[in-house]
Image 1 (cartoon, rainbow, N blue to C red):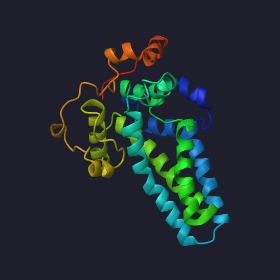
Image 2: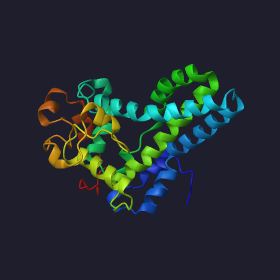
Image 3: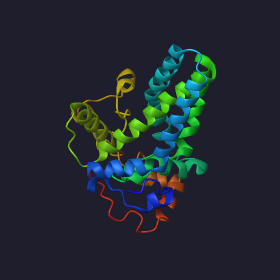
Length: 255
């Protein structure tokens, strides 16, 4: 297995989760350039934290804080940004929204539009946990908070992909998060915004354990970007219509 294949070469492969085994997913995960970048940053952050260490306790606290911030930051981002209509209503942001979330709901089995890119994940990570880590313990605090956040990001990417993989998890934990996340995709997109945990969904009243607990939404697959919306705000539709016919060939839209 070639470990370093580059983003362009990785994208040229067809990573369709409904046709992949668990081993295929592991291979796709470890060869994805952004995941490799996360691993590199994680090693560097730990090294910087240990090199500049002034308080082991505060370093561990900063790691924990970074890890705990991730679920809340993801919830806010997922609910209010990725599921917000304001992005597709803005010409400048339409392409970004299409790539980072609209295409994922259209083609939930396509790994190429599931994994996040560094250009969309690293800036918010730095801006969110950098200042908080610095307040905790200066430079080692920043390194610790980055460690916690990057670790959670990497783990969540893998669990998220596994939720869309056509396999039956053995653990009850993975079975439950898979069921709830797929309900978000195929039943009602206005709930279950978490990926590996749903604590903040429960806090803000957007959690539903069973599909019977929430009405079926007609916009779960298009996130509200209906034909009517496309007429008013055509930028995403224009990008979609301009895609080569072979780009999505073979992509199943079933769970």
